Length: 322
Image (cartoon, rainbow, N blue to C red; front, side, top):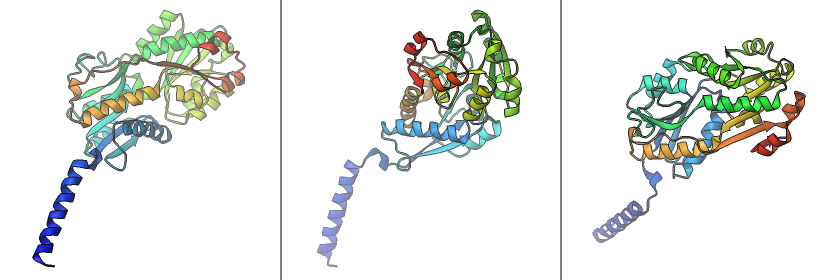
């Protein structure tokens, strides 16, 4: 190749490189890594990740292009070891939902940004204030206890002579003041509340004893280490009305939920993750609070339980699962 051609080729390559530099999309940069730490089982966790990945595309983050999502699905068995192992994988930001896994990530790192969906963010020690968290954690803050109070109203409308609820959760939800706060919420509503720790379907079956609709009972399901369809089938067989803070679980067969709009939540989580990935410190990002709520009722489950849904409740419901 002649010297003239070499120079011409060099000028052309320089021009193309300069053009590429000015027109290259944001995803041309090295991929960022999000660590997702969820107490849910594998199927549920992958569903949440799919929603998060979809919401992040609105901010020009695309999995497999400029984004990698590292999922840890815990099946209800969150441990300090699992949290520490995820931190060691060198992620740029962590996402989780629920107080127990957030506490574990908080213990595992004070430097990696954490975007979390938590209850009572200030009282739980995740933020100095909602407006200025002051740590490596930001996200969405809600009151699970307020959700429980509204769920008790749903149960009262659905279950004749409703008088008692058992709250079912994995072991980590027995920590702190959770039990006492739930009991106090029940007392305000004139409903007896018990807290039941579940590690197996056998525990759940035992907890359902004496809780049937005929006995004025209902179950409030927070998080369990197995498929919700199994929970729904067992509850229907035992004639137990099941309530949930997640509308997705009503689609899986639970009776009803008063919940935050999870689709809206994931869109807001994606916006917060985007801010962090672009350099804003969590300490400077205010915690947000839910603005949209959602009432869901499973009509088929109600029929299987022999319950009649009041017409006014059907009109209020945002979603009636056929």
